[in-house]
Picture 1 (cartoon, rainbow, N blue to C red):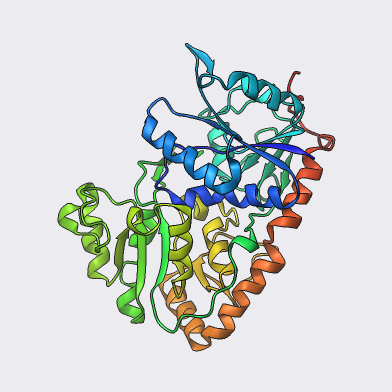
Picture 2: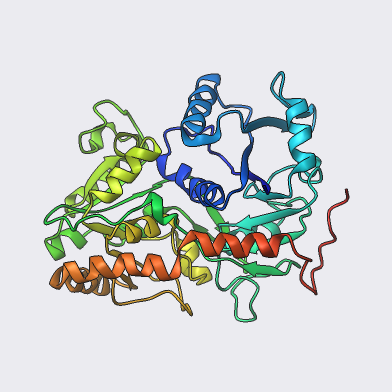
Length: 403
């Protein structure tokens, strides 16, 4: 049995982020289906509470990872620290594992180098390379480098390959976890997303732009009134979380109050994600009870033209829910027109929604078909593991990590 250690980022400190959990559960469940012995290795921030850790450990146990979770803390002053009683287990697992499948760009070299083979998986295509290029991130050396960005590392890319040979691996969805649902006769087009993360990007020319979802969503503030369709955003809005099941109240939205008023004036329904998607099961119910997805992307996706598609969108597609999402650039495989429609303007967004509504059942069936033929996690993960356990590609400027 192949032992794979998967290292996510920011999960155990964010137990109410049901969608964030699914980013990694897609891989975990696929690896389990392939007969692998899967372990969960996570670096904990110093600020994470013991209650959040306990809740996360119970959730991971419920998901089939009981006694296969290795949380740790690391800082330059104290080095690597394991919870009491787990150091010996961690040493044994790291020694026998065939592969570290690492999604944590900040994982310390002291941890990565313990493994016979290591592969970093980039799920922030374009952004990760930018962060590396400007010195905001300096990932430890890995044997293989993967990216879900179709344009990363190609000659036409908007950003640098930062001296790595990037192997491409498509974003994926575990189809068995997201079975197709019967089309819903009514209901809103929804999405679960971030709103404000105080994220800013400094471009190569020195200019700075805001890279929060609020920027792009506000450009489409009038879309519900224009289309007459119910459109809903579930996000982590600021302010009070009292009565979280109700629509977000701008008087209790903190620094997001002006944004909330503008969106609601345009006809948007706004929900707190903690109310509708606070755990993996709630997140899945929210997606599958929606009529479809409508979503914008972070501004960086528009600047970098990285052909990015969200793992969340794949959950909608697999569930038989059509998706209307912002265009992130030319793609050799991203379909456009049936099941998944991409837009570049308010006019195109309204037209795409009208196209879906004109033959909803057809687009619902097409959505599931797209997930099956393009994003099925089993062949994608099989290929990723085969490549990760092979020799590094020629031309890599990154030396294998010392053993």
